[in-house]
Length: 413
Image (cartoon, rainbow, N blue to C red):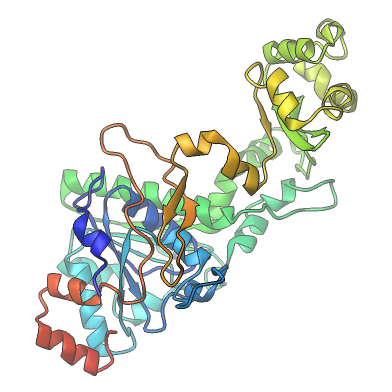
């Protein structure tokens, strides 16, 4: 069953014309390929016969009679087409090999050595497609770029957050490392893999030669936490969790409001002067204990006390009216508050898509990268399993009888 919405809306965007074979599952890989799809690349999601494992993850709408996929899968697989292939069969591998031979990019996040055992290694694939850009994201990277002692270890977001240094500087106090809420141990590597792939695609256009793009989730988290590297190198100090404060800037963090929390960030003394005036404490501008950032860092508790004397008796909305726009400020939002804020509507960051099996559409996060000439877009929902198998096979040169024969053999769905 071809998705009529997709068939009626040709691919547009800065990456239109690029074909991506997506062999990824879970979050890091699919998030990367979705970015490519958002900006016009044709992304063919190659799934096992049982589907990407996240299809069964909720949440589901109460009236969803199909349960083909829940919110997890919907959120990171929009704009893609799905073909179901059994990679354990010779015929299934031949189908995937033909698809890759006609592609610009292949992306996978299998454990080290899996693609080699399938006969789909980068070295084999480039023999017939020398322009191929091959992207891989794994917990500890691929041995081609440096054989990590942990190369065989499986990894998820929580592992890369822990070993990449993020948890070690996050938490309410020095003794309580804390996991970051969203899966940044997956999504940040996905972003970096996307950058690497596009850099390699640019190089292909110059030289005609593809290359292997390797991203380790732990490496990307460490790069995101770059401050801990120079702090330790320059001073010998090992950073620890700082709660809701910043070790080098003050005020820079969270402050209690009457109905929650707000963030205030004064990265230089000019902003501090404006904040002091806004909270009715102009004397803090000339007080030696508060006048400079270095002094405020040394007297951080007193700074927080002075600010919270003002913020904790006012609501987030009241604080936005008197502080917002003067200094870097933002209320700590719940998802309900995000849904209500006009910013996200104007920026098209809450997008409705169809949910198969449900009478009502659902909302997913929109496209954050805005291009003036070739904007990305959410063109259609995530695909049903094998929804586009026939169309993808026909485009690859298979006739109707070939397709039915392969389906009869169990090589495709």
